[in-house]
Length: 456
Image 1 (cartoon, one colour):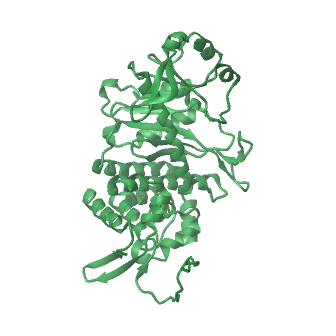
Image 2 (cartoon, rainbow, N blue to C red):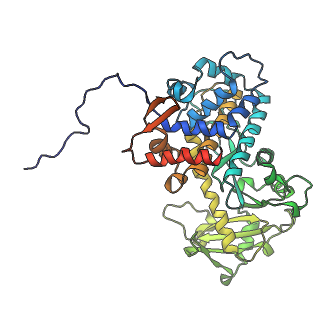
Image 3 (cartoon, helix red, strand yellow):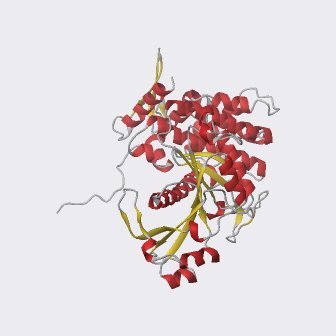
């Protein structure tokens, strides 16, 4: 009778006499990316006016190390220890008190300068690997619960307690562009907050991508079109007017009020068209139609269109009384994009759902835990978390292909960043020797080579 193995590991002897071994070796890819993109130097410049004399650690470098640690999975300052104990790989890394002082020194002026540092690095990364398609931006807000009373943490609309940050992501490159930490009582449809983030995101683009998107620019000057997407919280006149003033297209969810319901009653069955899947096939049980001529839209920008989708509800879906009587779940959105193919426009708006993935990844890169009691310090943490998200996205743009180019942070960490290696000292410098049996060792080795070729 064959005996089955009932152990989860092999018997072994554990010692502490290993030499020149480094953990989290793959994380050095992110710190090297920060250096080569100019982010580290730009962060140093952004923090140069913080008013504190630093004898050993540059505050910009401290925050860059913190961003690398967050990308590696850190969610508090104490987690910097994983980098600090590997100084041969990452250089001198600040202690917890020094990192605290760097965050404490990040005030309003520094919070304005940090996005400029990120923008300078983004210009270098995009020059090496330009976005393949037109830019698509997704706006959305998310709740972050707080387990203790922190400054400006307030009750939320879901009866929780904490914050309600708003962010914008570039769906084309999978990177965060801007974010705003807000109290929990902040409105989901606050037009001023949306407009502020829109302008921050525009100013964070490389100069050639900004052409034609300044207020007063003629639409013909636009060389890189931008589509702005949002859910119904973005359907405010102030936000939509700002989008149009920036010569951008919009595709924004629209609330179904009585006027929309009255218009829907006038739609004939033959007016509905089959919705599509991303591969071009017919989406089963879903149809789209246009309501532009059936509802007054004069208060919205010229060329605004209203498009509706109906679909058979999935099991467990919560329907309104109107949906219950119709037997379908209805959603609609407004857009200023021309064209008769409304099924393609609806498919494009449906892609806004990917913002939920971006938010989940943002929370996995520091947002889930705002570790400070001060609102300004937590704003600094959010700014650094955006750098962490950008470093991960840029590394995927420049260094990986296939599965790793689209993987989420947790997958990148387990397969690439959290890799042990042997650090060998030679006369010509250091050599990082990866375990040849590790399935993704070649991917990591190739990633370093690609980075150095893309940004010498």
